[in-house]
Length: 226
Image 1 (cartoon, rainbow, N blue to C red):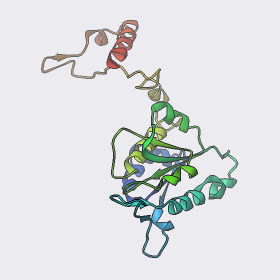
Image 2: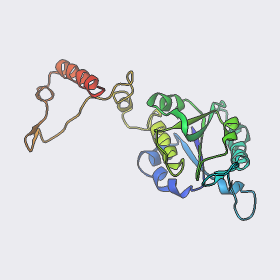
Image 3: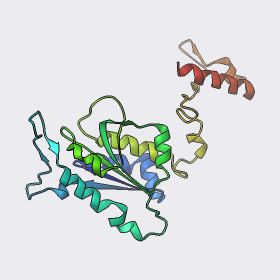
Image 4: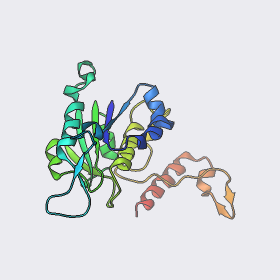
């Protein structure tokens, strides 16, 4: 799987994608993360990628022509990996925008089936609204506004990569967790010490009765969602 991220600040990603699980996934050859600097598609030598919004208003907008050129260059049919037989052109181009659909665990799992995911990071006041004509969908990670799409792109990338088979040492870790089973939260969890400042681990977890533990965990999961 290849994840291409279009951004004005690729340096924000470099430490994140090279360490921990994301770094190991790339070393294993399970995923490739490609950072694309939108300034490489600027309209002039000054590196201009934005302009004032028509009708007035505060801030600047990324130009649709700049972003669309980057999309076109790095789509599967124009990329170097197009001739690789294992790629079947399962591609999704996603604009990260506060007005998009909510990103979910189910969406992350669905994206692991793709050959190529392109994430577009807006900046300033966002991207010229005509960008919707060149993407497959718009996503948001929450009902709030950030300085750009870079942090949402990191969230989406992390959520997807950890679900790719072989990335985590124990694949079962992605099955018994929050939002996997009908949107339920994972049960409360505890470890040593069994008592800390008078706070005790639930007794049922200490007795070794797996049937009772399973019942307790189910009830705990359901109660957390209320």
